[in-house]
Length: 317
Image 1: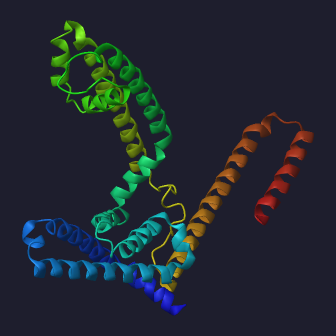
Image 2: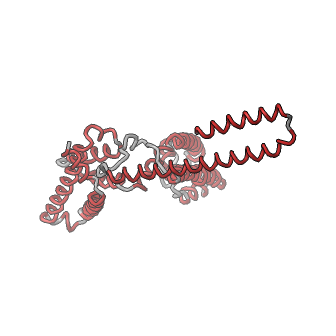
Image 3: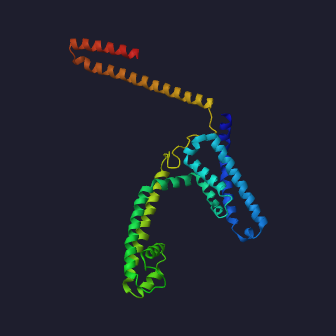
């Protein structure tokens, strides 16, 4: 038990987490530098980069092992820690495969689990998945309609490429046009059909200025909602995340201070109640003086009796 707590205190310490972030960034930069010719052409330099990358992977594995020792099976219930686990395991699994080793650059994604702003952004993206699904369905419908339209309108034209000769070619051309690379194709079509600009402009207006702005609006709305929350609700990746850091422990001084504050609050409340009771007594006495002259003897006796009873009850309180 002590070993588990000690592992948690070490690996979740802020300085250790900051060091891990620095190592992830340095590792990602070195993987980018390793793609240059001066590294690939020199076996010694390439070997040095490979050994350094292995050292980084060992450090990340030790950190993950300490997290596993501290959290136990609960590590697999925390989405962010599970994400780290998958990345490290895949890095070891693909270490011997030269082709798949190129995918080790995805190890840099672990920085997302360390920076709260990035975690909030990813959480926002997963929160808006239902709405993005509806927008994606709308976009696919628009693509299909314009794909069939462009194939029928411009499929027989003599163009510099097979842009619209088949439906699949048309869909790919529309996807390229959606990135705003559409002017050259439109001019080729306009050279043979003068009104060919109309469907091009309609497609660009619908996809580029309406659908994508709608996607941006949905994402910005989700990010704003999450940023405005004081306490984030559990998201897809963190539904079982722990509430406290591992270095928190029982503090008797803090507990005694909390108890003292509660006692002061109770004393203050008792003083306020006493003040209200005194004001009530004075108000009742004033009302009796104001109404004494207008009461009959029987009413006066009843009032005196009620006053005595009320006074007795107040004195008991």
